[in-house]
Image (cartoon, rainbow, N blue to C red; front, side):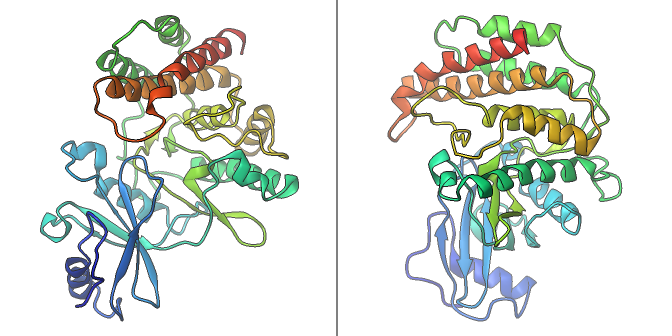
Length: 343
């Protein structure tokens, strides 16, 4: 069971090959090599090949302690459930919960060719017509996801939809309190305003939880979405939270540089209003309260960025660019307040 001489950190190819040979004999036909796929924000993702076929391995970050935040069984379960529906996901291969193999639970899925477009510059290379087609395809894929019957695919118990928005708002309020090391004008006003204007949720669906352009793979001559990735935040809940997040990521931040992936500046990129109109027309859902969901998305991102800034002030982050994140938090707060107040 040979492997490469230098295994990627967190991936023992010799042990992986042994497990694959035991559980899926004949799947691997040659020596394995692997590489870490950069760009992940939480769980670790590797490309593995035997020279003839390619797979992707997902595992929790090294040294993680909160198993519930990096639940490999949950991620694998939703991909397995959605495979065969209109939602494009990689074909699942296996789930391994034996920590003796790689030091943590992991799962394997087939490799899908495609590009995750993370910036307006990358997307601009497609040109206006292809950019428009790709982004509208993102909306259509979201409609397909929200059309899946959770019970029909075995996901009826995948979450607790009752009181979903209220729980989400309280959860992110607690996140803010845990990483609050400075005064943030407007953040309490935004949080309170969201609580006072809580909308009534439509019927629950499977929600992705982080649906945006750089969490899908686009490829082929028609620039279609070949796979939706990163299901670690998926659950049963209010589908309009996914749409609000997509609208936020499709909005102009008014920044020359941002740590948050946004492609809105690419020529041909549809305006947020068009994305909402397309979703409403194709899904049949009432999107009249979309300003609340978008303001909630701004609030969540403000809390996430403030958490990163807080860890940077404590010397707990490594890398370039963290020193500028703190100054961006007020921008997200302002966008959230404006969106909530003006719609």
